[in-house]
Amino acid sequence: MTTAEYARLEECILARDQIGAAGVLYGLFKQGRSLTEITSETVRIHAPYTHVPYHQRLDDGVVKFVNNDHCLLSERVGLPLSSMVRPELAMLPMAQTVWYMPTGLDPWNQLIGKAPGHYTRLYDIKVNQSPPMPQAHWPDQAPEHLDGPLPERLNHWLTLVQRGEVLASYRVFLGLMDDVPNRRAVLAHLAFAGLIDVQDRMLHNRSYTTGHKSYRARATIELGEALGWDNAHHVLYAGVPDMAVGPRWHSTYEMGCNIVQNLLDGRDRELLLQKEPLTPAEEAMLVDAIVHQREPSVIAAIVALLKAGRSPRRILDAIQVAAAQVILDTGEPNNFSMAQHGYEYCNTLGWFYDTFEHPHRLKLLFVAASFINHGSEHQANTPGNGRRAITSPPGADSLPPAALLARLTGALLALRADEAVDLTAAYLKAGFDRAPLVQALAEGACILGNDPHNQELGLSLLEDYRKSLAADRDHLLLACAKHTGGHRKYGDPLECYRRFAEAFDLTER
Image (cartoon, rainbow, N blue to C red; front, side):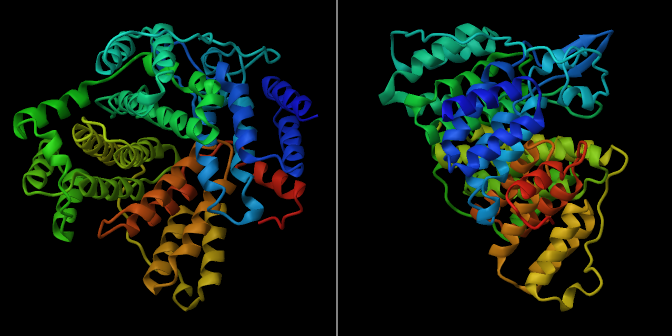
């Protein structure tokens, strides 16, 4: 029976039937099917159809950006997020994923009006036909096994990625994954290939990678580990081919390579062993340089901290605080793209540092800092943004914690982002227990739907808050409130939650 129900789920998703797909999914929830099983099946369903042949279209002389890995990213985040919310909401992140999935298929044809979905609403493209079957732009492949030492094989794979040989690089990667004793090094290089691919400018651009390949690589790795690699070929199909899809930008990473070689004498291994934290004054100095100064000052600040014996991982904590400040400085909903992607890149790099002992991760500090510095410059020169004072809302100082959190939730779901920041600040100032605040912010991130990538962004800030040793790590909670309440929404952002609440007899918020 379950096999038939997953076939019905696939049928609804491929027919772009959101309501039908949600109904099948709720039935699976009520049967008590496991989250990992449902995750595996949903990845299998969308894996062929969320790739593109290229990440740009150039129609009528106008460049348009095209990408869609939001289904995969949301499935990855649904696993940890399910444990951060109340038990009755544990399946809501997956519900948001499946609600979005019919709109996330075949984004390439969406851009030319041949298929409905996320990009047709983004660019206001009219679709004057019944939904066709989504197109699979890259067919699945069998492994290709190479001889030779592991470093040579990894270099060959990355060269194929750089050359844009999508299917050849995918076949080689599948063969590398069959080398089980070396699998961890192979996965580290997959993440590395994503992290080095970041565009080198932002202002007046609408076509960029914004670090998405690194997020896709992370989702591939974490989902594969959750499902077990013997049962995760479809996860590799969903994630790996995109590493070689163009365009590819490596110039910012080249900058990091040259800095480490020329200014730090190529001492990656030695500097990565440093454990000394930043002082609060040093953290404030670096945050100010990233948010308010030009890139040469940012580079000089990080080089000075490394030469002074400071820990690269703790420097990254400070870069995350700067990234959170860029979110807080964002105003209008349409302006969040650079701020949110910059933060997610810093979050992914933190995960990379904590997960793998990759030899080149020091260089990526400079990529992250440059990303946030360019993002801050972008926001400062885009109308509708700017610094605002955080003030306590009327009556907030006298509220007990539960009432304050209820008011915060109301502000988040009503999309009053600045009020949500002020209420979060009031809660922090009062010294209340942080755990209920983190839960309230996590629930806000997954209740607001219509593009579940945004629940991943909310989780990124909460995840780093739990790990950060920065003196000003509370900025991450403030930025989570700002992003959840403020980012661009599509359609009715509470529609999926209302249907979920009705299906499971929850009290509607």
